[in-house]
Length: 170
Image (cartoon, rainbow, N blue to C red):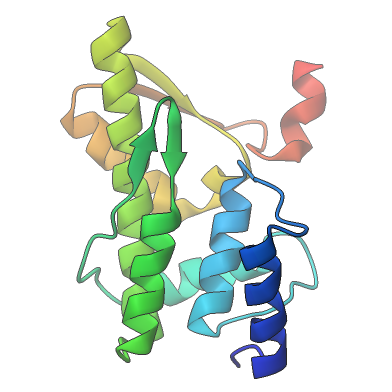
């Protein structure tokens, strides 16, 4: 269910005034934003709940479009992707199609950035890890696309990719 109009209005005012607008580098917050925009979930009962539901929803449809992102120096700006999702919501695109297109777009973004780094550095090996790569749909698509580029890819097998494997590195 979409957020109540008063909530949307309050958040819009906060963004316009840059109040409590902390930049985030977590892909989890991007998943949260998409979940909220499409009306799938406004609050999680546990970390990653919305992302898991978005993945499940995406598996029921094929992607129909690719949302764009922009590079700003060494950073990736996902605002255009979020705007594309919002536009599709306003145009009545079904949630499953949006979820599938979001996953496809994010995989292409990840692979695009890896490809750019690879061409600059000559590196051909990449490790996909972190909580986002618990998402099987995203991980498998990244593996497929990176494989097509001839990249050697490592993923977690014995240790979880999220914070459950953090102590191993410490």
